[in-house]
Length: 74
Figure 1 (spheres, rainbow, N blue to C red):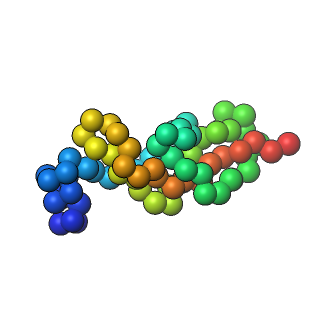
Figure 2 (cartoon, one colour):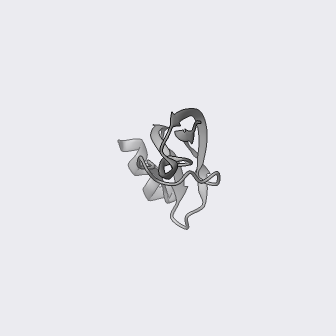
């Protein structure tokens, strides 16, 4: 917790954790696993977050978040 506070105060870098159901964005996320779905509306959305990402105050991504992504099957 202290390290995160120091990073935010000194470098303006903070963690971000994508929420389930958000659209997958290759600029902010990297897919580490595909989760099959039969729902068209879920295709290409985040199923869960494996590892949080980090962004600067200006929105620049320092490290992308690792996520599982829904992929429609069938």
